[in-house]
Image (cartoon, rainbow, N blue to C red; front, side, top):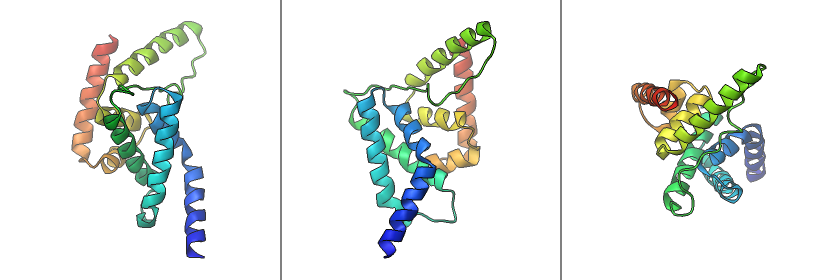
Length: 166
């Protein structure tokens, strides 16, 4: 009976936060097959770790931490097959009415995507979480680094993005 309740609780939370799985998978995998593999592995690892989840903490933060660790491990173990690719089309939603501004914005989004593709897994994770408007505290907890380290790395990344897009 307890396993059924645990499974139901997990399925409910996973359904509520499933976008996290897809965002992380699409950030680390270029091709649909790779995204499916990573998403499936993320779900498997979430289920495996779920009995140890502390309900007093944010599920989404816990989920991001596991999802990013799985995705980073996937990238590291499959470097020949999947080279630092990012598809943020689903992660970045830009609504600009003016066509000229929209075109400029599209170019900026493509430039940002190209920049993110060249980053190592940690910096990709930082940018994904920053674009998701997660707090520095959440990012630090998810990535296992200090808040000041998050702030420093994000500020450096912002500067590099400005230089890259300029």
